[in-house]
Image 1: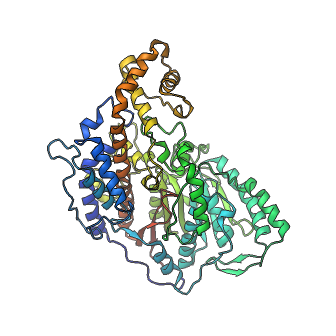
Image 2 (image 1 turned 90 degrees about the horizontal axis):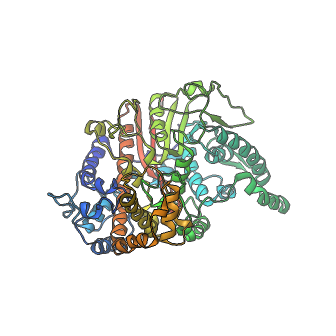
Image 3 (image 1 turned 60 degrees about the vertical axis):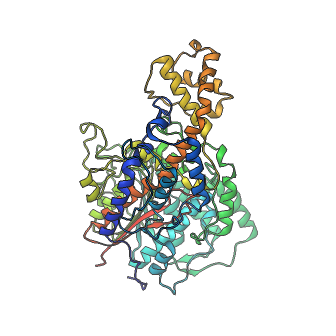
Length: 602
């Protein structure tokens, strides 16, 4: 083990379970709001059923909580969350279970967020412990922003430094990147830190693309950093003083072709001292990119708009992964073998220390059958979709060669739930995405799909002023009333998609939507359609307030999922240290928390 300091002390299992108990008491009443369909807001009278407040009062109370300070700041008048501390004013009625205090609701939601609950380990503190106080950060001349878009650069730079520090701490040279996608993290770990990386993805298309991208990257990397050499710990041994002006011009001209760096969306962020690994210029560029975020659709059409359509608040990694994957690994394609795994094994060599592979990963995947030269290694995953994140933790726990894990999950709505109301013969699996921990299994706790969808929302983006897409949500909710009244359809399984952005008016929206749903719009005169609009327009503030309640609640549901995973790791006998770490700026990358664990060093 490399020279380093003691790892930071993290909450023990009894402490985490006590925090879970307090959170569950709050969510026991609050989940009804999170699980409500926005589409059914008017057809099921959700405001009257769940809230005993005027919408103006609720919005005013939530606005006051916003003005009181950042949402990830500690609530005033409360110390760091201790076990079972929930001294809040009355939030829900004991008789009707309706919400009676929006201010208390917002206070409790802030209290139970990951950053305030006292369950996170500071990123910088962990890096110092892993690297040693005297170790200087390496490779400052190599910036991932040169090779990818700003958001991905922010994520890869922070996560790669943490992974390389863990590798140096254990003296490990091999890293396995599950759900590696286009290979950005894998390529950077191999090129900058000299680690031997296997990137495993379920999509053949992603694997082939990653191979070609890495081949070009290696050539461009050498031209841009011709004499850069790094050891296994990422320490720069020798670095060229510069590149010729012509090679720099060639590099810049070709970099978009190499890395496909056109951003899929525009992200917005605020400068934060919590992320010194990212330069102020990078953060500034991200902020500029996010100035037009409100006009950019984030969600692919098949991302279940009917389930929840706050599309502008979903981070791009949620929508990309959801649209490209229906299974535990990222990607559309599945290997052709009956077990979802290719019958080939891979062995790396010195000339190619990043090896992209195609394999469908489950909790029972045998890494030895995929990687021939498997040795002591780290298992990592950056925004692994749905069940791939919990399966990553299970693979770590069951394989002695894997000494550490660093997992950042996403797409909570694609998690499988053991205690959700679904036929067991339809989902006969034994290992579920949620819950993982013994405590929540004993409680038979269930979030529900809509609540998990809500957990994907980005509250921090609302805080910096993006706002809510209220009109598009209003259009969809009123459309549902029309469908129910005029066509007798109470549940519409088809999705309307992005018709709002292509519509010139409510009337245009309704007609285009009905046609897409296969319904005859000619039976509805224009006056009738506009009567519905005029009837519900005065109640648009109810929908706005209700959606704001859902957004405020989102971090609490994410806390539940993250605490479940952390408790699972604490329950493993050979895990000596585990933690939850905030890796990214949540405005730039809303799924910003990494679950970490290390095993005993033999």
